[in-house]
Image 1: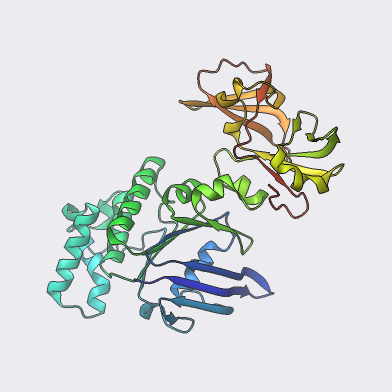
Image 2: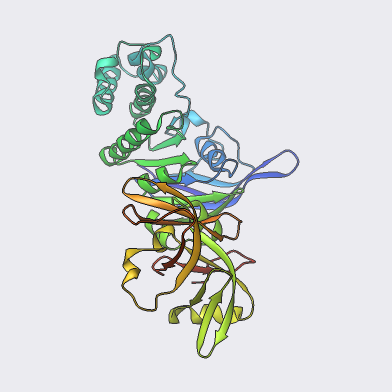
Length: 369
């Protein structure tokens, strides 16, 4: 097994366009690392450079103890699973899974053992004689993963492998891939634009934007302690509400104020907020911390006053869209208990909980608290 290290890696296209700009990332041996971000952020380009399918413009990539900048893809000891499965339509499942091993002149008995073992792991042993057209999307993706497993590579690379599947199958397959990682105990690097996949699958998450790494950490740390407003808004469903406002000093307290709220900032935030007195600042709070039952019994809890515009029942919980605009002009979203009695047009005073709330610098967008 092997870790992967990227040092100052760049990918520059014609015209000086940076798809990836001097990123540094260490992926530990046997770790499940997820690269996540919006379309065009550079995550797939990064994966393809690790695979050797894209030539790097600058920097260094190491797999294990080897620098692989000039090593052909076939010699990097990696296996890649693509979004579109990339199966041979005229070959059976067995032949698709065995094809790479036959090219490498593996003994027939070894090929058969590896294919059948991988098929058993993935639950496709009954489909080995079928051709891809006779399989569902989820079954085809299992074949693509099986073709990678039989290689027994040092590193598995997944490039948005579940994006062609329906919602139910995506949930099932991401569970299967997580189980596979536990069973194989190998390094996996997984690219997705779906932050739910990132949160549920990764040991750590690398959040990217515009060819730059924004934050690398465990899913819970990224959710609770985002590095900037982009990470705060990208990770989480619904995303964090981020409000424009300003800081004011009243007696010994520092107050965040805008048209919908006046909040006394916690004592532990004072040192960070002092330099923003009488200046603009951003306040971010998660939807589940607005109107939370955890705050309803607390006397003097800070509140947001807003009118309900839209109600979205989600089963165990309900999303309330409020007329308190965020810094992007969108409605504020509160996530409340499904049994809370609320009507459209009603004006609410919703208590706030500061468990995952933060202040952000409006210029750098970096977190302050």
